[in-house]
Image (cartoon, rainbow, N blue to C red; front, side, top):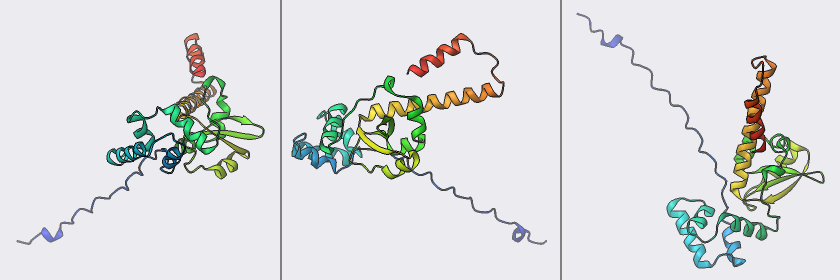
Length: 202
């Protein structure tokens, strides 16, 4: 009886998919810590505790500072702005223009770099960052917008809230507009108008 084992073709090895790149998180850069010590915002002892906690818990420096109760986010961001010689600004969503925020910088680019466009001033696009010492894509912004760039410093929570709400709202409005053009929505009732109005205010 013939041995058929040699005729069996082994299955091909499983194809490995490349691992997804890790998510990028924009955090306060380490070079800011000695500057805060030099300006007496932090003591050397506090800076040592911050670095130790950040290393052990693998935390961003700003999170380590807040967790230790040394500074809250707003005073920390103000101190960073002063150390960098830049203007500190809280972001009020009611003062912003949806088109300026969402059209000046693509959503993915803004979120990757932890920045948001918050207005225009004297021919410049005003861009908020939360760490003035982190790498800043100024040339890319100039090329995309065709404008000069004014950098201001704002709390990270403000930047993330504006980025999330404004870009999501823009996407929702584009989807609704596309559906209206395709005739999928024949009427817009009062409840939908109230929803869009409240979303726009947010």
